[in-house]
Length: 454
Image: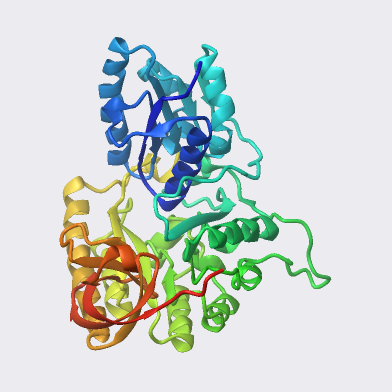
């Protein structure tokens, strides 16, 4: 089947890993001759890259799919693909539920999209969810931004948190070699990308599966070693990373972030609960005291660093007192940003089978109370920016005010100021902050720092 003049549309649900996978799959489709279509109804191939962390994300996929499955009855040439974590979790059950699907593929198969589609175009209905060794990918991703880019450094996760479906759907940890990571970053630097976020489901586990260790038994490849190895890639002005796990977060990593000028002063370290009994039930492998020590150490090295995290309320068995321990942790630490969620039982996870589930009312009440506190603390944290001069990397025009551009500070605060996107996109601008809100800032440009040409 010829793919020239055919259009594709990708809808992405969920985390940054999924966004990175979608960009790689878009790159493969464009290599195959497909063109991007903003409107799914004008596309000949529709790919849903799915997330199974929360039930509502999964339900959304089914409602989207239902609409396109109907369309397929009128347009039999339409190709329907479900990729990502729901695909991995449901496998052939998805085909039984939506027989119109052509391809069901787990996240580990993102790099094989071309081969899988060729099999579909030869008339097969394909399910690719078996465990595979992730191949190094040479396809140029179609990045959604021309300023910032994601680079995966480790796939999968070996942790077994009792609420989490990720290890079942993303497979075991597989680190890329430092050379492969650096080569991808160098290419992005040559293409003009100014900021790179290094990604891993559990990024601190990076390198544990790579061969080679020192005589004392220390791995040659830790995530900290990787930062030292890639921090000076030409053209790249800023480096971020996510997601960290408190169990493996070291002082050596914090020290590296303080020492390396391109690494941003922003840490995303989920704590999930402020109560030790719940952390044990979640199988997180640390205490709230250890989490507090990590934050104290970060603030000792970098008093101004931004700290964001994830938290779950309404985990099975959570008492009012245990929930209040989470509120106390949030109140004491003062996060710059906190992603909050009410616990949602996921298929195939231990916690989903426990009998001490909480009512939806309790979960929703606790989520509201936590979100209120998060907003209050974030607004307090924002005050420190008032009157300060911050370096902002300009990414886009402000969609709500065409006279303004927007970008992020090194601490990952969204910042708006007056300016022309055509002149400023991809530039680092010194901005004097004159307005602060809980999660964003406004200011005025005082100096554009020309990035060094590569």
